[in-house]
Image (cartoon, rainbow, N blue to C red; front, side, top):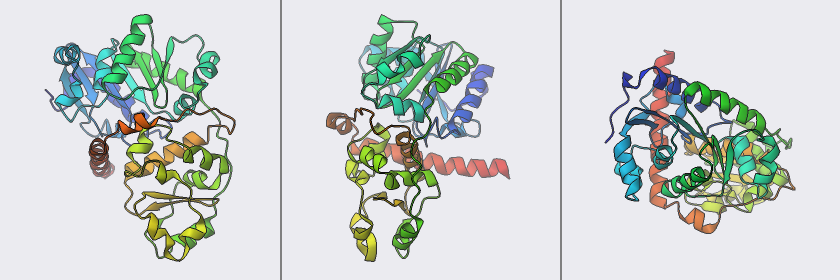
Length: 354
């Protein structure tokens, strides 16, 4: 059902690859292997493969080519077409459902900061005025999200932007150029200034990390998760979006519970060795030395999101049933794909640079 990416996609496909790579290199639009893009050419759908990093779109074969008639038949049968091949994006059904030629789905930091608010639809009415957009309550990736978009398009078939609660955005357009223009407009409307200036306590972080299995992240923004009280409160009370659960190494919400620095001194951090990172109360963050690039990117993205949520904002967290939908096997498989893709991407980048 799939074929490797080739030149058969033509110039419009080449433009999508360029846009995908550019968007993938912007951490405010894409973190790690999240997000996906696609283009329909004739009876074929070219879509980003699961676990691939969008940033590598021009250096690697991150797209797969699928038969649109076959995909649509699978949807008519109530079968998630992504199950036919483990290469295709989990959001393949959504891309098939949307009639426009070009589609991009992003975990934009600004978009998520609005999408986790219980009053998000009201807050965005004025900001997105004039655009053909819809707010979609949270739906699991795959068939549930595709069915939700299908129903929304029946009501308003001219929709060009979906804001997905606790998830991100989906933009659709007849061409890559039109999509790129709309994306720039949407991002400018959704932009939120960062709120938290609290600096980390590097002396405490260095003291705890010395002679331990923990490292200090190079991304200073990550430390807001531990240094700022509002940020700590936000992340400790619930899971905001799916990637938090996926990259928490099976620890779920426990991974985001702040830990007292005193509890970590004198080797006490060993009791938290199952966590991929430590949120140190009033100090900052330490990360496991074996944390994956994808896990680190998720942490950076989370830090950027919470810096755009005010202390008074009403937050809608994912429900337990939503989190339970991420099976450990599926999450582990996705993390493996993301890790493998990041290694391939780095090798490809070095070859290109050399």
